[in-house]
Each structure stands twice: as structure tokens, then as C-alpha cells.
Length: 482
Ligand code: 5AD
Ligand code: SF4
Image (cartoon, protein in one colour):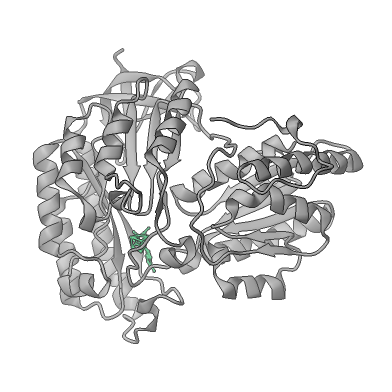
């Protein structure tokens, strides 16, 4: 990527208007402020970004870290050791919000002992006006608050916050902007997330995401390809293409480009070895995409296909635009074209008005598909969504009972699937030295399953062929063949 040299800016001049130049100017300015503060406190300033929620947030955190590093912060592993802590928040379910408030209390205690410490909050939760009000009322020790749409402005906001002794708040309601070529600090040298689109236009009735992430915007294919090519040149072997609904990629581009076309182009990038993507919406999953997956040697044989619910009546209420039959047909097509495909899903239990019959429809799909794994969620009421206005909430004990019944089947299927691979030979990408046992390294199969094999740190980032010797439920112990 073309990152700019910070030394080229004359800070006596005012900031340029165009992006990303403007942000690089502010990075240069922040660098002088951070250096001054470091001199004042007598040591290099440290920073830590804590990510809540999904892979999109994880990628956003890498962008924040990229800027932090460039302006002179040293990134540290532990929040406790940091002079600057950023919480990149999630709000998809209520408990995500509760976690943030719980941990903020703890951070406050640390800040009391370290007055120069700064705390910033960003991400999806900050797009909710009630949360901003709560912060203003009860969490005045927070220094900087920004949202999802202006994350690219972090350097500029940091400059303001460093000069201010009051809480700096900047939240935008929406945006149509995509700012390219900002710095990123990749967590892994050998694999990376790549945003292909932002926002969501689906407005599933229970979901807060379209309100906090804004309207769907796709990055231009040239920008995506250029970013991946430069990642590959820098040692990346696996990419995960990220979007709330990747199957509707490119609909707002001129000329239109389909997700299948984008995938084919990514598939051609030399040196790239593995391609993943998430998340697919069943309503937009095309035959063309299945064909591209079946033909490719790089696209992982894994499809995360959120079901949410198996009842046609509730699917309609949820605004999902597919039926149980259509969903099952997609699964059949996928398995026919790619026999060893791993299929995973998301399911919500206890949507308002869910009857036992509706729930049995969900169980029926689960029993027919036999998912490799499933994320199961108890419905969480999100203020502002259409479902939150519904009055027929399912009693807690009924939800709990259904959730347990679902979990039992999902676990049993997952274990049986995992067991069925025992004895097979798989290619894995080694990701790290095992945290519990340093004589082992841990890698991932094409379907994302974890395998531990004897090895050392020199193997990180390489592919090895392994035989899966023992299945331990959801992971394997393997032996190296190549
Ligand atoms: N309650 C429970 N689960 C939810 N999800 C989204 N909104 C809610 C909600 N209000 C789940 C969906 C989605 C996943 C990311 O989170 O299953 O696919
Ligand atoms: Fe939420 Fe539905 Fe968009 Fe997924 S597709 S982010 S569940 S609104």
C-alpha cells in the first residue's frame, strides 16, 4: 500500500482537505504531541486496543493500531500496562454492552493511579445515542468517543483529545465515504482480514447492525485486489474477505461487480494460498458463487450460512427473504457441488412470538443439515429495531429450555462431524506455538478446525500436511507428514 511519509508535512501550514492526506498530516501532528507527552512522563507511551465482537471490529482495531504505532505509541499486550486504552465496542446483543461498562469501571481505577492515562471508546455501541448519554452522565473520565463512520479520522480526533481536558465526542449518523490507504497493523504476518464492503441494507427485524454500521458500501475491486497483492508481497498467505453480507457485494458499484466475480479475481492472485469469506446471506447466495468455489483450489471449503430460524412464518417476520425449503435447497446445491464443504451457521432462539412449532422447524433444519458447527444465540432485544416493539416476548424459562435442546443437537452433530475426519490427511496453516504446551504448534485446516502437532516457532506461517491422529471433540492432535 502507498503509505505516506510523515516527514513531508509542514505542520506550520493548515491541514489539507483531501483524504487520506489530511489524516497523514494529523498523524505527523499527533507524533509531535505524543513525543512531548512521553518526555513529560519520562517514558515511551504505550497503547492497547481491546476488541469486542466480530471480525470487522478486529480489522478496525488493526487500523487503529496502525495509526497508534505510526504516531509513536508502543503497543502492549495488557490493558493494565497501557497509557492509552481503546475499547472497540460491539452492540449486537445486550450483553456486549454490559461487558464494556463492567470493564470501564476497572479502567477507571487504573486511571486514578495514572493521571496521564487516556481512554477512548469507539465502534458500534457508540452509534447509539442512549449509550453516549450514559457515558456523559456517568463515565466522564473517558477522553475520546467516536463511532464506526469516522474511524478513519482517528488521528485527527486523537490530536483534539490530546489537547483537551474534557471528553471529546464525534459521532456521525451515516457516511458514504470509504477512505483508502491508511496504515494498518496486522495481527498475524501470514493471514489477514480484508474489508470488501461496509454496512448492511437488510434490516433483519431483530438486528441493530444496519443502524450502527450504516448503508451498504462496497470497496472498488481494484482497491481490494491492490490491497491483497501488497499483503501477499508482505507474506500473507490467507485472506478473509469481510462484509456483513458479502453476497450482495458490488451492487452499488458502477459498473456492477458480483461477489463471484470479485472472488474469481482474488483467486488469480499469485502467491495467495487460501481465501475465506464471511458472512453470506442465504437470500443472495448465487449459483455463480457456488461454481467459482467448486472450481477454485484456494477458496476454502467452508460456508458460514446464517439460518437464524427455520420457521417460514418467523423468517418472514424477521425480514430474511428466504424460506426453510429455499435454505435446504441451497445446502443441497452446496454439498452437491463441493462434497466436503463445511457448513456453519447462526441461530437465534426466542424471537418474539416464537412458538414450539416454530422452534421445531428450526430443529428440523438442524437435524437435516447436520452443521459442522453453529453459533446459537438467545434473542436479545435491541432498542430501535422493529422486533423490539413486539410485545409477545417468549418467557425466559421457555427460551432457556429450547436453547438447551438446540445446543445438545448442535454439539452432537459438531462432534460427529469432527470425528469423521479422524485418520484423514489435511493441509494446515501453522499459526502459533501452543499456549499450553510449547512442544506443540497449532494450525488450522481448510474448514477452520484447529490441529495441534509437534513443532516449533520456525513453522509459523507455513503449510504442512498432517494426519489427524486423535479427535478431541472440537480439535485434533495430528502428526506431520510433509
Ligand atoms: N439477538 C440475538 N442474536 C442476534 N444476532 C443479531 N442480532 C441479534 C439479536 N438481537 C445474531 C445473528 C447474527 C449474529 C452475528 O448475531 O444470528 O447472524
Ligand atoms: Fe444484521 Fe441481517 Fe444485516 Fe446480518 S444481514 S448484519 S443479521 S441486518
